[in-house]
Length: 179
Ligand SMILES: [Fe+2]
Image (cartoon, rainbow, N blue to C red; front, side):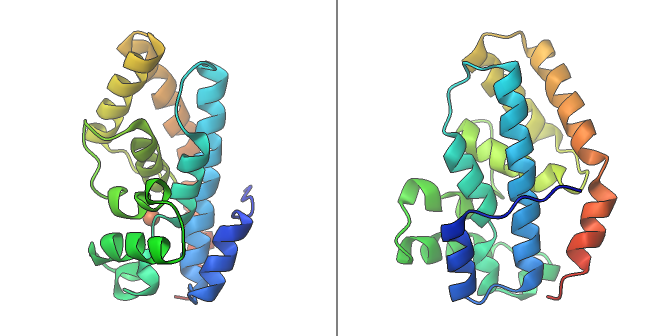
């Protein structure tokens, strides 16, 4: 199982705010999935325009608010979303990068492609499917690339299936890290 390191500035911030090993592991997994997703999109639609760095940053930081809401690391809750955005803004990150902490759990058809891709990374790592999210992505990518929606769906479906093959190993690996 390949898990590339989180970007340096993100690692520094996670240290500063005392992020737990479980949270760091989860962010590393989501970031790895985002790397796989942007790489596959680049192979399939090299002209597709979106901010790849923003997607990677968003995946690497989306749950950072859970450092202030530790109960949401193991249970449900949305308080970490707003708290995470505020934490990133206070640390000096740009609003357009900090927003993913707030948007990753509330994507809809109107969401920008970057936000949908962060939500996909945060869903696909554990082998979960989200039809509404996938429909929004098909529509968005089809519009931006000029590819027929059914062709976009086939590529996305293959990608999400492939990413799901290691879901159990990822869940085990994440669980080994203390909360
Ligand atoms: Fe997450």
